[in-house]
Length: 124
Image 1 (tube, rainbow, N blue to C red):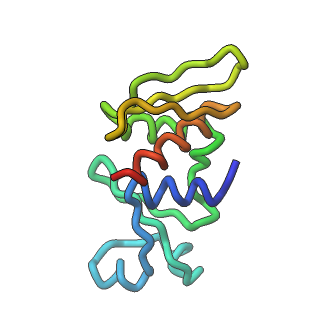
Image 2 (cartoon, helix red, strand yellow; image 1 turned 45 degrees about the vertical axis):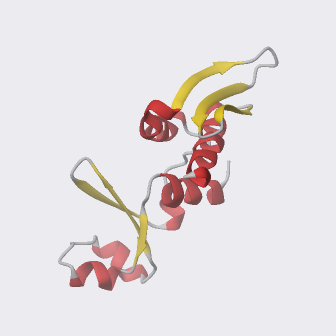
Image 3 (cartoon, helix red, strand yellow; image 1 turned 90 degrees about the vertical axis):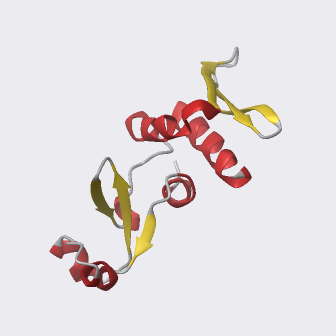
């Protein structure tokens, strides 16, 4: 759907960090040469004792690919109440917020998941 939404999910919800290749090298973190040669900031994703690197153009498509969106679902943990479809065929994600349960919907499940995740991260 949206590269901007994917970037927001990565940085605001998944806590990936935008880092310069030189900073990573100074910390002794090996960065693939192809990414270093581009000279652009790199998104660093730390998960399951591994570090993955992405450019802004190579981010997982959280907002339209269900397999990428599932990482977001797993991160929601107990804030996720349910995932369902309504009578109109839209996907509805219900999450617990400080104000009680709240619903977010979209035609595609990944986009609805991302909308809910961004709402959770905005309230944190």
